[in-house]
Image 1 (cartoon, rainbow, N blue to C red):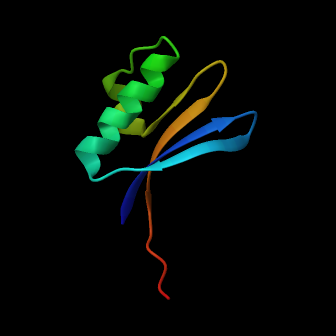
Image 2: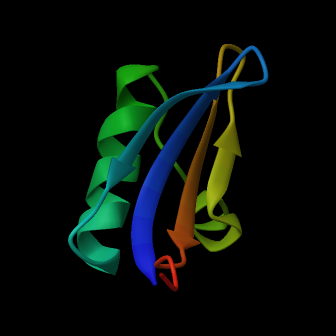
Length: 67
């Protein structure tokens, strides 16, 4: 599984960043959410995403292609 951060704006993927591991993914999540002037809560980390006025930011685990 590949830890990744996805930012969605206007229901379209705006960016996808691959993280090194789960800790790095959480740091990327914090940085991205903070750029919108918001401090994520434990619930946001548990949910794996946060809905903001202008964007949705998600922590996801992608699968490697089989071929």
